[in-house]
Amino acid sequence: MKSAFVRTSLVVAALVAGLAGCAGAGQKTGVAVDDSTITGKIKSAMVGDSEVSASSISVETTKGTVRLSGTAKSAREADRAEQIARSTSGVKAVKNDIRIQ
Image (cartoon, rainbow, N blue to C red; front, top):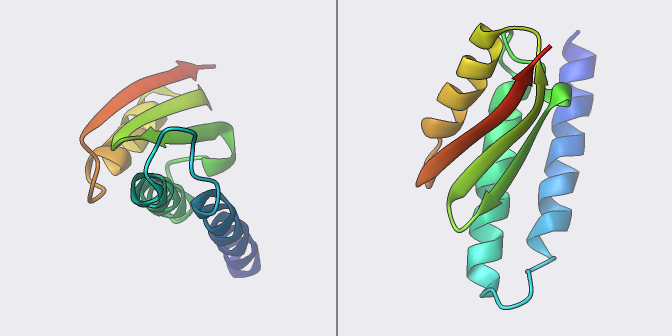
C-alpha cells in the first residue's frame, strides 16, 4: 500500500514538473507554474485521502480556478474532492463537474 502511494506520488510529481514547463499560449510563465503547482497539490492530497479515488478524478487549474471532472462512486467522494480543492492554497474558485457513477 505504501509502495503504491510512493509510486503515485512520484507520478504526480513528474506530471507537475512536466506541466510547469508547458506555459500556455498567451499566459505568463508564472501563472502556468502557479496553476501547475495548485493542480499538483490537489492531486497529491487526493492520493493521500482514503475517501477519494485520485485516478478517477481529473484536476485542471486555470488562473487559480480549479475544474474537477471524472467519476466518483458517491456524492460523498465528489464532495470530499471539492473540499480538498477548496482548501488548497492559491485556489480562487472550484467548478465541480464530477459525475456520480
